[in-house]
Image (cartoon, rainbow, N blue to C red; front, side, top):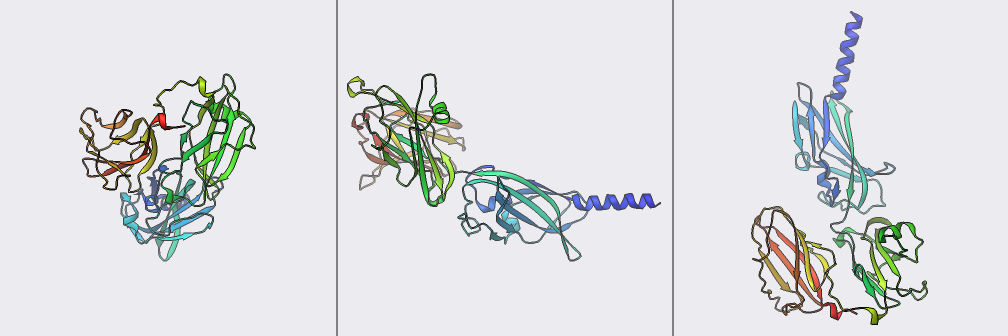
Length: 373
């Protein structure tokens, strides 16, 4: 009899601690807002309603130290499966416990950039006693909408200047970052190496840390570059001392000007259209190259192009009918080299409105290859 009672008590105790199961439904990579931390499923495996509250702890992914704690209001969880989001748990009280991060105090504010742990706990309220009965942890990587992008010298270019100027774009959106700084690394590429191998394995020819500007003239104090040698370079962006993202690795070869044939370039990366009031920025040389993900499944383009350097902000007539639009990813590559409607060193805005009436944009500077020195 005692054994039976003990077994029943053991089962009841075990059931009491496992009657609520948390299944986080987090977006693991990308730009995240506080409210997205509360996307989860609560499964009540008992036969009765369980009262309690949910807490979310955003922590450092490496050492687990708490950064931000959110405590939601009390709620009743019915037997079965319940889909939960921030709206169902409002009001939520946030407490920032690590002042080294800049976090928007608003309930819908963006999370800081970096790698974090997210631990979601359910606390049962019963007979005036609050006890933790469930916890699940996951990891997220908050990254910028677009990483920094290298501009010049473009990838695999033949550079004539012994002290070339390097240009890049900041990560976006700019409002995400605090105390934005850049590190530049450049290595010589030895025979048999790829540019990425050179960046990883070779001793830096130049390491320029903590830059504020998005351009750098190769310093005269650095080791002299040599003709007919190939070099790799990369930019690392840091926000408040923390690495947020890196560019791709590009390369260039130093050549005497008389040895370089005049060719048009089409090897700049595709620039993404973004659904934002702060469109991404890119440099387009002779060609317009952009990437658009057709979520709405449209079959025709609805695009307007504006010359931002025209005081009247006139639209530019352009035929899009000849370019197929497919569901999913679309990579568009248009030769503008002989199009008189596009002016060297002018800024343009491309705005696409899809079938859901969403606006996707790209801001770009157009350059002609013959105008680049």
